[in-house]
Image (cartoon, rainbow, N blue to C red; front, side, top):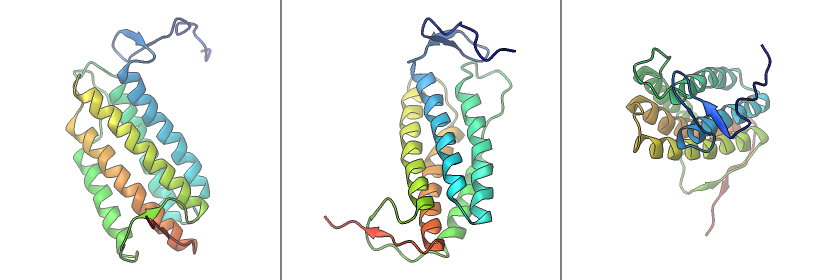
Length: 178
């Protein structure tokens, strides 16, 4: 199988089990942002030293492929993998676990602190963009509540992971001073 098909040379792409759409369609932008987040997580993973955070990124990257598959499949009756509430709940447990080792926040912090922390903060902002795009899509086409909750919780988890990575690397959180 060749990597190129030439079918997208006209600016269109095929959705799974669905029609060809323009590459700038909202659905394609939504799963494109999720794909970008997944790639950024790969970069962040290579900066992480802690095995528990690396393993968490591995799980998140696999789950983001599931989110992408769902978003690339407009026909909701098709049998494709989907994220579940259990994965959202697992992220909440991870947030609670990591927050237990972190100092209490008294003000907003600027992204940075360590290479791993900065990479995770970048992932968080890409996740927020992907979430906004999926929310726009959900206003026009069916998107599961679990997918929306997953992306919302993921950005929270990435924030806490960035703080944990900074703490573990000896990095300093930089407070925002207006």
